[in-house]
Image (cartoon, rainbow, N blue to C red; front, side, top):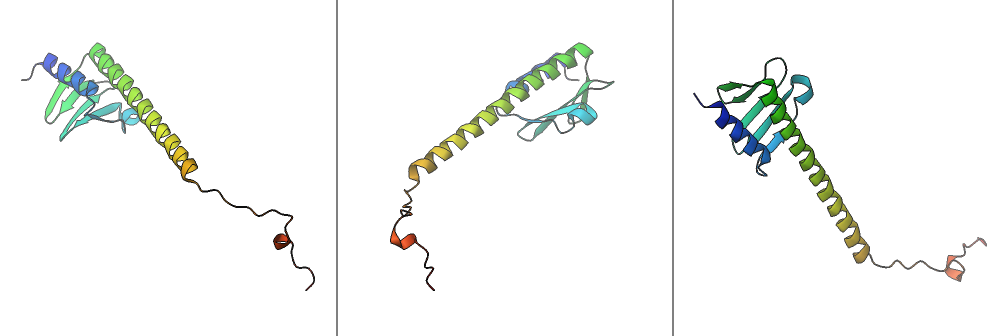
Length: 122
């Protein structure tokens, strides 16, 4: 049997790792979040019974342990979400700036010239 403290330590490292991906698809419906790292999936389950699932391991959690992991996960999730939004906004800004710089000047004819007066004598 794997030591619970070792599992908790690994899960905390996964939460902090920039290489791991988060899945919150079932956060509201099943009180479940998942951490994906390479081909590995670790689930943190809430609800009446709280536990960590990895492959065929099911490690029970105390309320305090679950609360700590869940809080750490959600803080990191929100931080990543904010960073992604800021990065996308920066890319949008750069894209607009590049278009403004590369935009060629459009020659708009003077409305008073003879070429712009409609021919009404037909």
